[in-house]
Length: 95
Image (cartoon, rainbow, N blue to C red; front, top):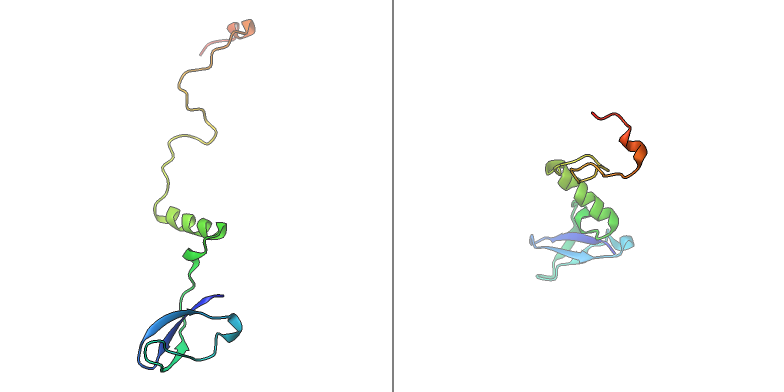
């Protein structure tokens, strides 16, 4: 069930999990008992907890905090050239 925000006539705000088919019904405020109506609010995409939510969070973070690239993708980290014992390689021209 989604979580909706409500505000009563006495300006108390609270959240409640309500079935989607009952989202337009008026509820009573838990603090004062006055009628409360659902408010329009932003979706809570950051609280998804699924792989889609994690992807959205990492994409938003990379927009203003990009990662630092220190090497090409797939490049080896070793600085030395690989050593070969094949005699055919000894005849190749050297740079």
